[in-house]
Length: 141
Image 1 (tube, rainbow, N blue to C red):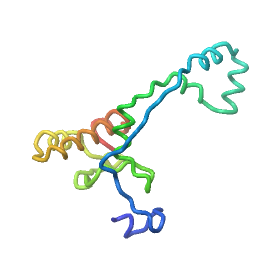
Image 2 (image 1 turned 90 degrees about the vertical axis):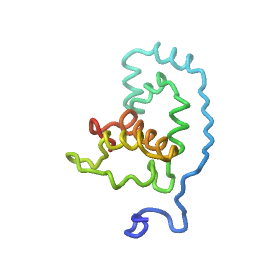
Image 3 (image 1 turned 180 degrees about the vertical axis):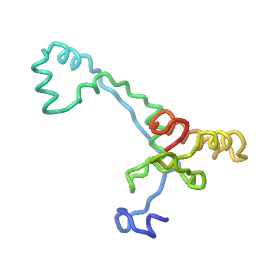
Image 4 (image 1 turned 60 degrees about the horizontal axis):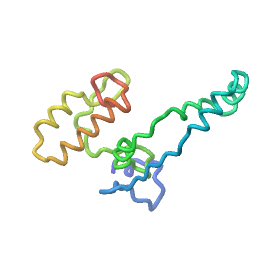
């Protein structure tokens, strides 16, 4: 609401909302043949590829974690192209050049909040902030 009131990049008429259920289909092709081709190339050919396409070949070694994608999809807000985790602004503190939430605050909330759904949501937020997108140690940015 603050973003709407003060102005943002949300397209007029577009309603930002998070879905209660998001269906994610994760399929991964067998990449063995692609890997074999890459492995056969010498450094000169690889450098040519890197200069045109960057670090794209590193994706050949990435394992798709379907559980991570399903969890992240729940909180993706397409209107703002960011993850939205609900109302956590009351706990945000300045830590160096980052505005973040101390892990201890989140941990206390997870252990004591009477609403199980809220505890689950805060644990998800903590995992994203501490494991998937760490920036400031001991804090969720």
